[in-house]
Image (cartoon, rainbow, N blue to C red):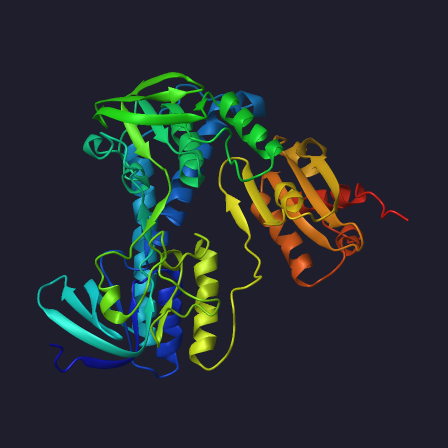
Amino acid sequence: MITNPEEYDLVVLGSGAGGKLIAWSSAQKGQRVVVVERKYVGGSCPNIACLPSKNIIHSAKVASFLYRSDEFGISKDNVHINMEVVRERKREMVRNLVDIHLDHYKKSGAELVMGTGRFVGPKTVEVELADGGTRTFRGKNVVINTGTRATLEPIPGLAEAKPLTHIEALELDHIPKHLLILGAGYVGLELAQAFRRFGAEVTLIDRNGRLAHHEDEDISQALEEMCRDEGINVVTNAKVTRVKGNSGESIRLLGTRGGGDLFLEGTDLLAAGGRTPNTSGIGLEKAGVETTDRGHVKVNERLQTTAEGVWGIGDCAGSPHFTHISENDFVVVSDNIAGGNRVTTGRQVPFCMFTDPELARIGLSETEAKQRGIPYRLAKLPMASVFRAMTISETRGFMKALIDTESDQILGFTMFGASAGEVMTTVQLTMLAGLPYTVLRDAIITHPTMPEGLIFLLLAVPARAS
């Protein structure tokens, strides 16, 4: 029986991107707000995911420059990677980010409670406090922001092998001798390249027939070429049926590939095969909150759950798994709690994968356009034709744009090249403004910069059929 719960205007379960933003903004408006966080202040992004991984990836890029030093006329012998220093640089950044988050809580007036929360009734959360004891909160509104965790597929022997996930991989103080990576999504590709550059032998294994199989074939080919050139062994179309050994000592993967047997050996194993929502064991049924068949909190286009006054934000609610989308979820929910009617339908979802070079896209790919029967005009430009890429010897990749056949609207933009994320944003802003591609084509863009390449790309757009 619930007795005397503490009453709040807003209770947030999980302190990830969207949850912390709605907490801080609501508290600054004078509302009584509490955030319940099990472990990571600020959620996964500043602690164990986005920012720490990019920190490690940048260290690996510096290492790659050292290996290429002769190309730039610089002599550098006996390159040595000290993973303890690499890790400490990352840890120092994380400590600073946590301090910044704590300062935001203090200044906003939102209360942060460390502990494990679960629903015990409608809009009511009981928390087992990290330092002992319990507290129970009831909110006029409750936001579920519990995120996701690395998926361990039900492959016999996988769990027993104690594989690394991205969390443990980013905490390594040594370079694995031979790292097997199971899954070639964002985590798999980014860390495969990073650890190869640190000096590990790396084998990247994926069940699909090609890397980034949701993207266009030219992207897959470019990624495989990148991996091959860096010495990463890529094994696609692989079905792993058994794992033997212990990660950190000796690992063997058994399975099938192309109708034959598959046998791979290594010293360490990284499981990078997707994400599982953190929705089990938190009492959703007691709050009247339903989940989807994949375990996500079921929400509508306004991010309302099936329980009145309860909202879902971010990965756990099935939103695209990006911090910037969770931040936009905050805008949607905040406006709707205030009486608005903002929806997620039709919003742009930009993405950037931080391999080197980066892969970024906004809007439609060719594959998606063809699947949906949307006609387009295509322009494509190799990065070797971009002046800035020439100056920094980063000419791998290409950029391409899809333009509507009836109008001059930009339907999509994809880039595999240096600074792809920043260049993509320029195109995104043009799309958001509803401007024709000709505005960007005819713009005066600083020379020599990466966005300047957009001019040459868009000059190659075929004319509209008369």
